[in-house]
Length: 50
Image (cartoon, rainbow, N blue to C red; front, side, top):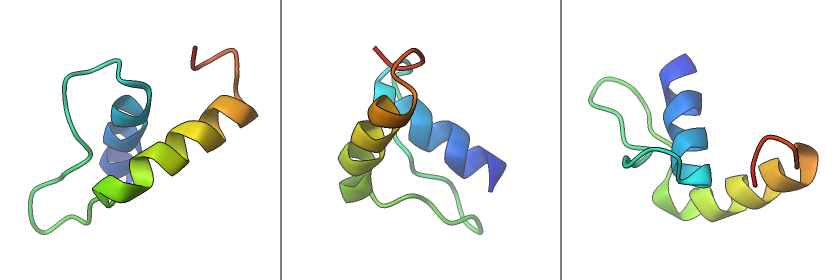
């Protein structure tokens, strides 16, 4: 779960050139959820995500 959250947050803020996909057997955050995650993170933690 830790890797999923790390990669999803990196993809949401665009600070790393990667997507949220993980290799099997781990679950990934769906690509379509990244924009929603980014908006929620910006509202909750504006000082973290510019």
